[in-house]
Image (cartoon, rainbow, N blue to C red):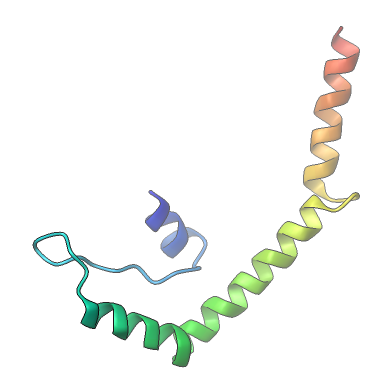
Length: 81
């Protein structure tokens, strides 16, 4: 589930495919590392992760959506008692 989320949902990773024994070989790992470090695909992933980092920071800031939503829930709990 994590692999699907990171590769398909977040577009923040390259999914590895194990061989018939369920093992990812060193050649495949070397190829994937090279794609991430040197290829356009790696540049796109890095750019995407910078955008995600900024969005998460904004959501968690004092005026961010996550902070406001949590404050709203806390206020509802306080008023409920």
